[in-house]
Image 1 (cartoon, rainbow, N blue to C red):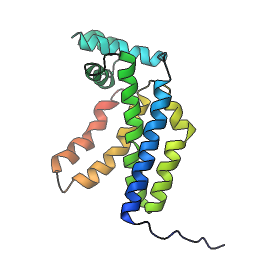
Image 2 (tube, rainbow, N blue to C red; image 1 turned 180 degrees about the vertical axis):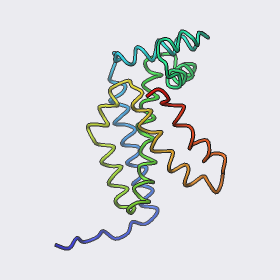
Image 3 (spheres, rainbow, N blue to C red; image 1 turned 90 degrees about the vertical axis):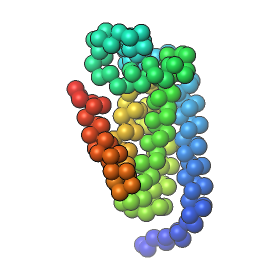
Image 4 (cartoon, rainbow, N blue to C red; image 1 turned 135 degrees about the vertical axis):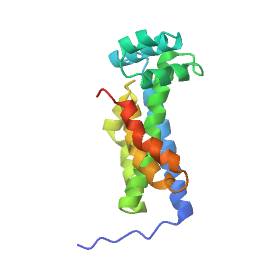
Length: 178
């Protein structure tokens, strides 16, 4: 059976589809995240560590959770969003949505534009990743960042050489004890 290929999408149509899928993912994951009112057990640990960090008690924060980057990010975002749970959920929400961009770039590089659009559609609608949206967990944050490093390294190496070096070393600091 010969598969008929869909004619190449025009670049403008491709951009519109990409942003439409990104917007749909943003709305869907936002609804799922903000429908959760009770933090998970992990979320309580992250919030407690973030509270200690925001009060200047770095040692106590490390005692609560030994990998400080995520709770530090929560405490930083708490200065903008006054609710601790919502600050943590916002990080999860944005990380899950932003993971669409490197996924699209990787798939487009490996295959083609049509495959890339289908992959981000599947990612945006997949129940597994959408269950991450209902959990306030650092898994969402670590889902985005490993995907972004190869893309950032590939596209920024010629333009900004220092960025590629930082992005190549950065994963070490995120999960040093994992």
